[in-house]
Length: 127
Image (tube, rainbow, N blue to C red; front, side):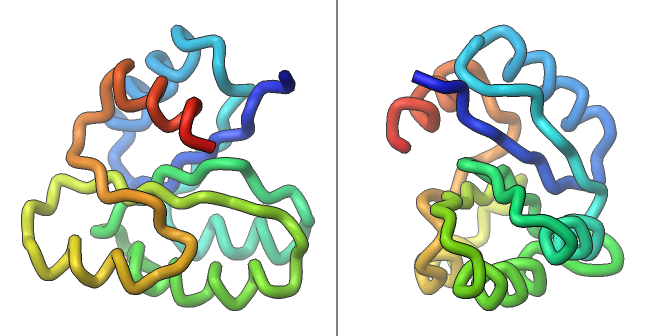
């Protein structure tokens, strides 16, 4: 079974570093790409058909936050025939955010930060 592509969209460099190290330990994913905000990711996705299998998405980011990214990503996904699953990885504990996330067809789950090995293994098994 080929390794799954996982991309991280988050503006926190420490979170990205720790998550990258965890991803490396699982041996379940190919080399992850990372983006500092939704705008960087959308620009990349518009220029390529290289959509990942899994996206770990933060909500609170400069330039383009997670919600704005989801709006654009859902439009983009309709043009590209590739299944990508989004996991919101947020420190938000607001019920409104969890309910709003359920309205997006491409969002599989709302995960509380930090991500740990167990969560990554479950993500790999789900898709």
